[in-house]
Image (cartoon, rainbow, N blue to C red; front, side, top):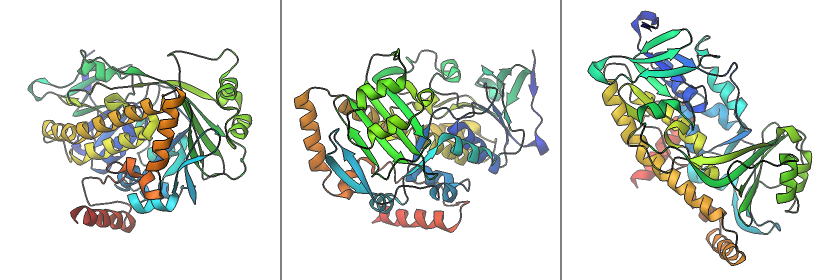
Amino acid sequence: MAARPEPQPQGRPHAVVVGSGIGGLTAAVALHQRGWHVTVLERAAVVEAVGAGIGLAPNGHHALDVIGLGEEIRELAAWQGDGGMRSPSGRWLARTSSSAAAERFGGPLVLVHRATLIDRIAARLPEGTVRTGSPATLADPGVAGGRPAVVTTLGGDIEADLVIGADGINSAVRRALFPDHPGPVYSGITTWRVVVPAPVAAFEPHETWGRGALWGSQPLKDGRVYAYAAAVAPAGGRSADGEKAELVRRFGDWHDPVPRIIDAAAPDQVLRHDVHHLITPLPAFHRGRTVLLGDAAHAMAPTMGQGGNQAIEDGIVLAHHLPDAGDVATGLAAYSADRLPRTTGIVRKSAKIARLMSVRSAPAVALRDTVMTLAGFGPGLALRTFDGIADWLPPQRTYAAGARGRQVHDQQAHQAQR
C-alpha cells in the first residue's frame, strides 16, 4: 500500500512514536510542547502500565520538570526518615535517609505505581494522540535522499519526519535498524514485583541482600507498599504452585516486614519476569530519520532503579535536539552522542551490581556484606553509587515547572563549577 502523509496541522513536523511506555510518552509530550504533531501507535488494545511500581530518582524529576510534571511527581514522595540496606536477619549494612538523598541529589526518591506515572504523562497529550490497537512496523527508516521515514499500520503506511522506536526490550524497530546486533541477553536473575493493597504496619524502607537474592520494601503515597525481589535462577522458570508460594520459599524467613508483605499479597498480582539487558551497546541510537529510546536502546538490569529514569531522560534530550524538522540528521546524531555514553555506563554499572548481588557462597557473601557495611558508614557514603547519575540535569534551563526547577538547576550548576 502506498505511503500516505499524516495530516499535519498548519504544516507542523510529524513524529510517529511506536510504543506508549514511559519513554515514548515522555518524548511525545516534549515534542508536542515544541510544536510537533505527534502520533503514538500502541499495539495493545488499551494503554496499560506493565509492572507494579517504579522509583523516580531526582534525575527523573529534573527531566520531568521540562514538561511541567516534576513538581507533581515530587509531591508523591512517601519516604520520610531513615532507611538503608539490610541482611536477611535484619542487621543494617548501610544506613541513609530521605533528607540526605534529597540534599545530595536535589530532590527525593519517589516511588509511584507505573499506572499513575503513565496516566499523568499521557494527560499532557491532545486527545487522539495515542492510538491503541495499532501495531506498527518500520518499513523505511528514511535513510536515503532525505526522504521521510515510513511505518506500516493496519490502516496503511504513514510517512513521518521522525519515527521513534519506544517498543521495549524486544524492539522490532531496533532489529530493523541494526539487524546484526546480538540483542538482549539473560542477566542471570529473575525478579518478582507486587503492590500490597492493604496497609502494612510502619517500617523503614530497605533493600535486603542475601545469598544470590535481594528484597526491597518501599512505601507508596497512597498507603500501599511496593515490594520487589530478585534471585539467581534459570531463565524461563515458573513455580508450579504460584509465584506467591515461590516468594514464601525464598524470602518467608527473612526479617520483618518481608513475611507480612508476602502474606498480604494477592497470589494473582505477583509479577515474575526474567531480566534481560543490552550488555553489548548499539553502535548508535539512530539511523536515518528513526531513533530508539528506553529499553529499545539500552535495556538494563533493575539493580540501580534507572531503567525508567533513563527512558524519561531520553525523551527530554531527544526533543531538546529536535526543535523542528529542519535538520533531523544533525539532531539525531547529537542525541546519540549525548545518550549512548551515559546509558552504556549505567547499563554496565547495573550489571556489575547484579553480579555482586548474585554471589552465593558464604565467604563471598560475608566479604560483600563487610565491604558494604564499611562503605555505608554514614548516609552520604551510602549514596555515592548514584553520584553522576541521580544528579543529572537536562540540557536546557527552561523549566515548565517554574521556580523549583530553575532553583535546583541553578544550585547544581553552581556546585559543578566549584
